[in-house]
Structure formats: structure tokens, C-alpha cells
Image (cartoon, rainbow, N blue to C red; front, side, top):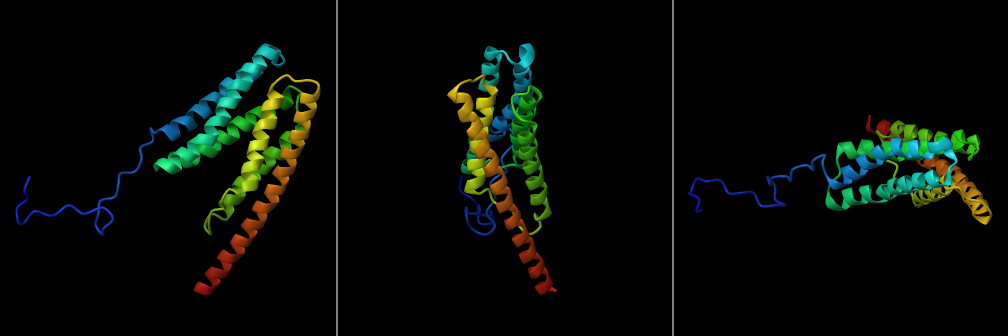
Length: 212
């Protein structure tokens, strides 16, 4: 349609005054994967404790649900960033889902006597402490996930998954060593994040004093 002389021209993309694209809706593939992970938490717990909690068949099914949850954790954040589907819901729900599935696995395994309680306490205390620390420095910036943190998450997921399965022999020995490595990475990355947080807070406070 030909516009008249007084008709306003549509703003070109990328130019001042151009209309911004609408924000992504909550019902997108990334958020749906996150919600699936949340829904899998009670399913996993029920499967883990089914028939007394030590039946190899039920534990294998529990492992399958845990593996699906961990796989969605690998993809939902990446999809959200690549497709421009980052939402406030995803920012809140994603870390909650991560900690819910891992926490339920650790606590469940300790309750069943398959994993020492000190391991569960160390890992969960680290996750809670780092989360609180991020809020402590959030006004000065966001602490990005490091390669060590990603390796820690991967190692934890594999080790916990192996503990969900009923294993013996060299496989049981291997998972114990892998869990030991996961604990070491848990502590090492915690120290790294604490160092980053303290440095970020000092720089932020110095900047505030200079701006007065």
C-alpha cells in the first residue's frame, strides 16, 4: 500500500526509534526443559526409594530419570542463549532445578547409606554458600561460571549417577575415586569463587568511594 505524504515511515531495524523485538514468552523450549527437570525431581525420588531403595532394577530406572534431568541441564541454558529465549523465569527456575535434582540425589543416597553424609554436606553447603555469595556481590557484578565450575558440575553428575546405580567390583571403586575428585573440585572452585567475590566487592566499594 502506498502511504500518503503525512504517513509516518516504519522505523528501520537497528536505527534509533526502531521497535524492539517482543520479549520471549515463558512457554519456550528452554523453559520447558527446565520445567521438565523440576517435574523429574519427585519422580526420581520415588524411583530411588522404590522397593526399599536397593533393588537394582528400580535403581536403573531411577538412574535413567536422573540422566534425563542432567541432560536437560546441559541444553536448556545453551538453547536460551543461542535462540534469545532468556527469561526472568528461566534465570530463577534453572538454578533451582539444578540444585533440586542434585540435592535430592545426594540426600537420598545418604539416607539409603550408599553415600557418606559428609560428602552430601560438603557439596550442598558449597552450593548454598556460593549462591548466597552471588547475591552478596550482585550489586557490583555477576560472577561468571568458570571452566572449573563446569568441570565440577560434570564430575558431580557422573559420580552421583554412578552411585545411583547398583555397582560392585572395579566400577564401585572407580565411582568412589570419581566422587573424591568431585569433592576436591567442589572445594577448589568454591575458593576461586570466594576470591572473585571478595575482589569484585573491593573494587565496587572503591569505585563508590571515588564517585562521592
